[in-house]
Length: 432
Image (cartoon, rainbow, N blue to C red; front, side, top):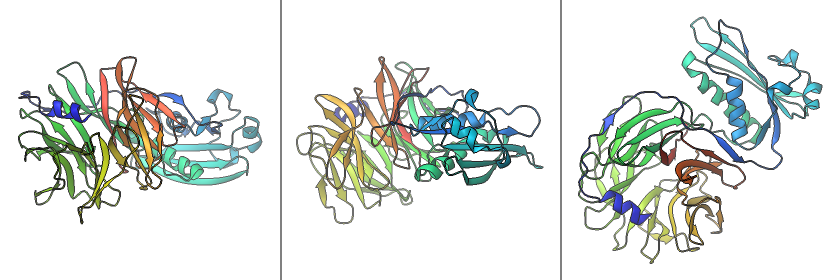
């Protein structure tokens, strides 16, 4: 992958203009669940009652049901099997839900406020203990129905599992249509509400979120060579950050959003640098004749993890910024690259070659034990959900580039194939 990156980023003059667009599109990523946990928790999502005029543009209950099913942790009760559709506590008969085998029940009622916004009151019931364990109110405009559904999903997921949900987060990824059409896309974590950010006739690489979720950085060839840009997602305003000869690649925001790590070859060799985004000062972090690339930050922001072949083969290293102390992190296998640290600092996820095949793997940062998470071939570009429970990556399926996801225990897996072109280089957003 180091060689692929160098060949892409040093491939002569490229000369098409990058066109900024801000148009919405229908979702083109479709969820295909391929594996869930053994004995998932049965849960019923009753249809939300609607007390307004006309019909809502989104079925909130169906979205919540799909989210929870996609997590692999839950097995929703089919709506046609339900004996009733309660929307308030007085209509909940625990016996009916025990007959269906459900352990939890979600109900809700949507109404219109005086200001025209929608208000949803939703509740979560524990069927086995026969008690209400959650009641909340959430509001939003007509355009926020999916946001409301994702919020409900997050709250229900956390109330039952104790893990913060990530259904309300987003993803960005690169969609390629042929050899001269590349699009940087944004979508909900479930692939819905796909949104075009950037379109170019030349490659777009290495998209990355700012820690506050308000900006993205990526590599573009619009100037005739690789350059790093950052873009405000709300306004669409863009700024070019680098314009050096040679390699300008792999941008990675620091956890505090003040700096950006990147790979530059401006001094003759691919090295890791940081850029202070307020002063525009570049600081060289590594200094070695080998190739140093693919930086990411430690959870505390005090160190940078990167890929280097300084030991002869691509392996993962970590440098402490204050002391410049260098430590090799991976030893198992002859290829480990593109590492990212989990939010709790307990795992590294990476591309790991096993028996000549590239897989996504995780390494325990305490014991060094490696676990292979994926069974497909040519897996790359792992990106963690902000709760650390799942990661998304790029792979091949039926000869086409797609996105896929897997839980860190490898128990849950799903695919997000696109109806158009190949998709690659996913980046999962932080919490908003």
